[in-house]
Length: 480
View 1 (cartoon, helix red, strand yellow):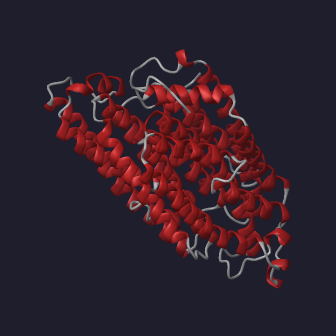
View 2 (cartoon, rainbow, N blue to C red):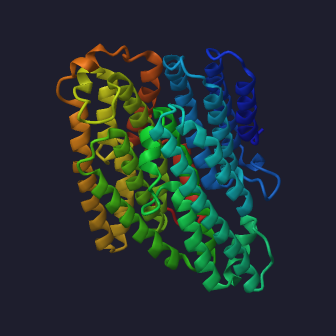
View 3 (tube, rainbow, N blue to C red):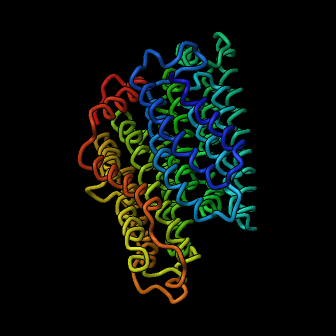
């Protein structure tokens, strides 16, 4: 039943390609989304049935990522029905089929218990998601698609090289040749350290490219800027989380080899650098969808920074992965609504969104407050946990840099967001046909509700799943 999380979306993709009705095809998306969520809940509630073969197994961090991806897709699938009704002039066979295949391949990543199998799954997500970026069929969307493919191909090639280095490190250390994660962790203490270090760096750069960590982030502004809002939500909340899962698994192997300190130093440095780059490019950013791309670069930096800060930092990072995914869903869907109403993404043309689209504008503003780590929203809890981890380890410089960069991002992002929501809509904007509709506002409202709840209370089952994922990394004591 657990593996149904892979096969259900793939069967749905086949059905979407076979259906002839452009109007009925989008209805497949919420049907598959709900079925996938049901299969996911079954899989994570029955870990003993997670997989019988070493190549296919749902490990503790994979359970968290699978739940996040499934919830995010289920919500976005209802938004997709409303969105595609507005785009009835455009064929949606490829869009629906590729979106479902994308879900299937992200689920495949969470189940992959073999380094090579995970690499194949991540590469397949790139191929299945690339056509989604070209849905608008403009010159800029074509450029974004090719950039996404080319930069992603370089990253995945480096990850393949890193996988080969990791395999050779076991051979050079006289260990059994295997790329199954269980075997790699078991034999890691005997690996050749120079080859292991090189493998970690290559794998971090390769999968870091898929996450969009600076300086491997160059595909993100174009891809997020040109993709439909729900696609941006799945990339920022789903694909990046799957790439982070890959880095967690590689870090687990390095930590098992006794080289956690080596990996942690690199993760912390890259995290701070990514936050710094995002802060610089977010200042005076006029395109509010590209602004969301740089916000994603910042939060990917926060994730790897937290992973490098021990048990409490890892707990905060995995929790922040969930929180960031939910908030990004709110912001991308509300930004997509604003884009449709104003027919522009530039602050030079967009103003007064709170008047033109009261609900979408309010969600965009609330999402900004949440994503910048303000209470009482969920990202505040996870970012505070990571900060506390830094200061409790007496790493005052790391904590200080993080605080300063969070402030820079808040100010830079705030200027753009306030320019969008405040003021008076232009005469052109008031004449466009788009208005808030139930299918385009209920999904982001649902995600925003979850963000508020997680900011006030972390449910026991979710906290237990995250704690188990931290123990998976070899930490005997989990202190959130």
